[in-house]
Figure 1: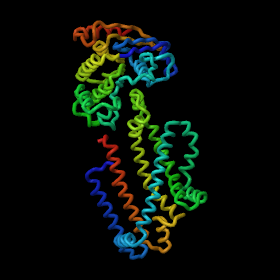
Figure 2 (figure 1 turned 30 degrees about the vertical axis):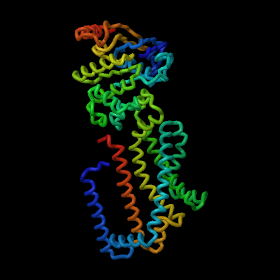
Figure 3 (figure 1 turned 45 degrees about the vertical axis):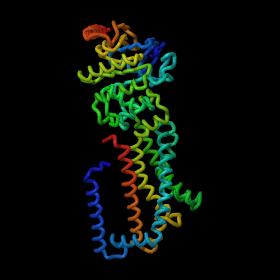
Figure 4 (figure 1 turned 90 degrees about the vertical axis):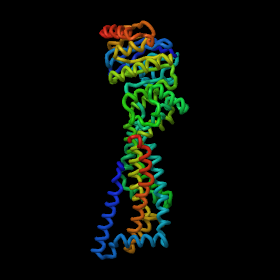
Length: 235
Length: 250
């Protein structure tokens, strides 16, 4: 678990200010969903927290350490982003080189992919690739998980399967997590808190603490929260 | 690439047709300066068993091998750096253009004048001829590196060595193979020319000697051997490497 802090974050994008003194705090073990329309700056925030984007002013820290110097977070990109020339096992070991064969198989089985370690990503379906990406993101037991639209372009069946899988993973790891999403149901299923981002420069239009623990919410509760968030999205 | 099941039989038919055509020409021509493949084969066997052919081939192979390794090594590093640093690329552009366009023979003559007719001079001249081509190929490959995979490497905090091994080199592999393939054919040809110019052994030197006697059978015997070695390198070295490193493409 890791505390995430953004202080007076300032960054320009395409000549216009994207963030102008943005403040944000995510507590230990908290799962925060960033919502807002496409292009509002959700992904950029995740990239800053992951140490990928270092072109900003202000501070972005993980447990008090500058994001770029902090230990590797678990990062799930919008696409699976597996290296196509490496096998599934080799892709996973990028995140944790010393992982034994047995542990690797266990981790793969946990995402329903037992027996695929010697295959190349091109031999897997899109859904299977996403699951490998999820396994890779949590493989090193990171204290911070960053999920960038992890369910984008998934069909309904796969979406529900992945939601359940990510939900289980978050509950098991107790990691702090920041999820960029534009779908209320994802936030309602996974998050403790939802931040609605809007405007340019980006402002936090609404900071909503959701009732109950994400993993313990009933289907009806998730539906009710989803409905309520959908209304808030218009903020 | 694209080694389908019918590839080898078709290639064999093509090669056989060429040999038949050559033999027919020789039969029609009936000339000492156009021996057929059978006569060349006989001469090849004689030169290999009792003549200097194998020693010459060894000398040329060593020279070409050194030139190839040096040009690929330094050219790859240079190309990667040029692709990574646009300012360095601009700074070295005149040097690169000079290297690409200076006739091979000019480079060889100048190196021979400056360093003398030595093995080092020959290998250096070969290396300098091939190096700019490797550098340009690898520069293009480096420019085409995926920023998506760079981001992944950063998020995973890969060490520079792991980043190079797992992310960069595999993406450059098609460019390295292209440079190697064109390098092998080019370096062979250059080595021969340079051997004619300033060496006392090797395939090129021997061919120039036979040229003075108009001994076409011996010239073609050397050329055939030469061709055989290139085909062997392609079949036994390049293709297996290519199959292995590109096997993920299915």
